[in-house]
Length: 253
Image (cartoon, rainbow, N blue to C red; front, side):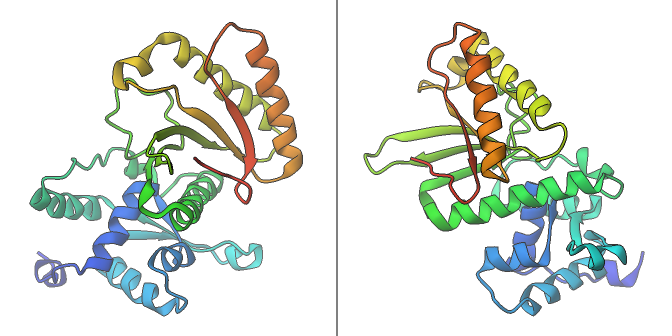
């Protein structure tokens, strides 16, 4: 056995949190980790990522062209990192880590990575806005939810409103490309079908979640909202609300 692996030091709190975040969002960048930890000095995160890389717990996607394109290096969880995370979770009797999906992370598309980083960025933003009132479940967090919409939304959110009422949301980030409306239409129809199925009633005694589509421009929001309203008008479904918004304008509660 490699001595560096055999004598691997116990992870500190920040390193363990990095592994948890990579499991939660699949990919993370130095800047996103720095935002999460509230650190302006990026070296704080860089040192911790470097140690995890050296120990073979995480990998890094980076090519020379990334600098020219203004793209960050993207870190991801390796199988050994997932197994290590599970050992720490076992100590706290937490949920089991599912490592099936992470085997593909070394070869997934740049578009997939960008999407994962966008979800992580939105998590940081909403956590800063709503603090402990917000519960943000990523796709990885929802993996064991049998009666959830399929495919899973980017996030399932709950928030404790000022009146002590819990509010629920399904959230998807839409990439603004040539397939914007095609992708939006598929997701809209999926949520309508899910509402009709009655599966939500099997897992929650509460109003059906509001569906939020996060777009990267006001123009995209208008196009997606128009498609939502059109498709919803074609079916008889009550208590379903679609909202298209930008990350800057998103409001919960």
